[in-house]
Length: 221
Ligand SMILES: Nc1ncnc2c1ncn2[C@@H]1O[C@H](COP(=O)(O)OP(=O)(O)O)[C@@H](O)[C@H]1O
Ligand SMILES: [Mg+2]
Image (tube, rainbow, N blue to C red; front, side, top):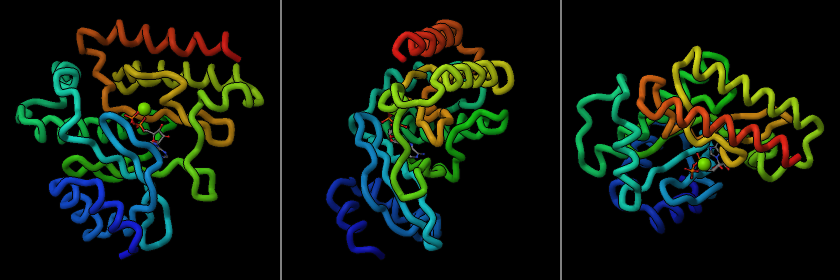
């Protein structure tokens, strides 16, 4: 294994996370963890490389610092998730699976998002949205003013919100220029852990908030 990757793993991961990362590596899902693309409150995202030299995104949920109350609220009423163990790990693992399912369901109806590869415990593997040179694509907030046709990109995001709602029966619930990556002028929706079923009592409110966030972008360009 790559030396650098072991350093990353032993330096920052707890035993549980290390075990889960090793499990996926030993099954051949990826070979090395290259560098952190992003460190967040709830999750860290790394670029990984497979033995074929392809990149993957490895999103690792934190168990200790996560907001469980919020997670439970979002997991409730979801017909896909019942009987979750209400332990920290149980909830984070359900959350990780939920993001996998949301990405899969979104992708199936034609929403551009990273294709999910595997959810195992607190680790989510998905396609790396990259620029072809190994760098992650920028967030929409950082390139909004550089877009050739920002209105078109915004319209496309609105179509994705509609598709998500009508075809996948999901509401993203945290959609903004922070959770959209731009790859060759195309918007790609990410960060779907909190996406909820349209049957959730907050669905309409969150849908309206998502739409307001995207509408607001038109005034920033
Ligand atoms: N599939 C991916 N490919 C490339 N970069 C990604 C991918 N998923 C996430 N990222 C990067 O990691 C950051 C954090 O990911 P995100 O899913 O939004 O988690 P959170 O906001 O909960 O920390 C993103 O803003 C983006 O820069
Ligand atoms: Mg995010």
